[in-house]
Length: 316
Ligand code: CP
Image (cartoon, rainbow, N blue to C red):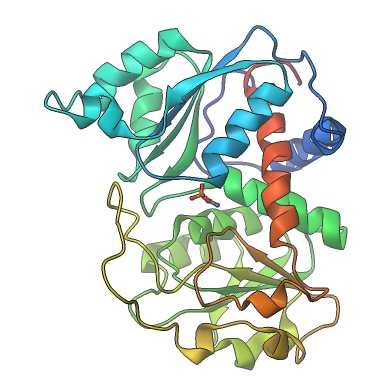
């Protein structure tokens, strides 16, 4: 297994199974710090720079909370309009990163352009963590999801994941690549126009993933150990931000999950959603035994603690 120290976390396509398992194991070791609402001094001399060129609630705050829980400091921006990249100068990513690398020891970046964190990593002497790049990847979210599945179901092999929603979405890409490392099947459900890229399907199938399409949730719910959801009605992730103007269409019935829909599935199936949700996930699921998205959001702090400790060399 390669060392994590000094490493960029840009995607899951090149993360080996043993490396994924190491992140999950270190997460389990550090979890009591977050669950007991404590602070440690593991990263007391380190500073995290958050560089968020797109809105975020969970990913930014979970990384920042993780750093604070481990005793480190946090600087950064949550809106590029408050930086020189987002005003008259339109300062380039390269020039910006050449500053940021001296302001902290790790850079966590969200950006509307696919590949922007990878470009930043070319210019940064400190590790860069991809916090979501356009329609590209969202590796820290999916590591959080794997941690949640392993914790809730006890294993990652032998599972059928029903992945519902916009398959252009970065989480779907990272999930597919991660599950190529396990004995797992993905059954995906999405409307026309939101299908996975052909290159993605070809690549993950070549890597051994069983993946096929179903017409609607009702056609595959009885197979699912995990129902993995993203909105169908959502923002364009290639835009820096997108405000809502006027009413929105409703999510069509085949792509919606409710307590009634889950009643036709396995009793032990769990529902994950990286959030925010729209109308694809009914609030009545919150009160069922299937809901795990609040645990998933809480686990986001724990897994980011592990990633920070690993890339900054505090854990091997
Ligand atoms: N899960 C997730 O990426 O949420 P945010 O957009 O709020 O960070």
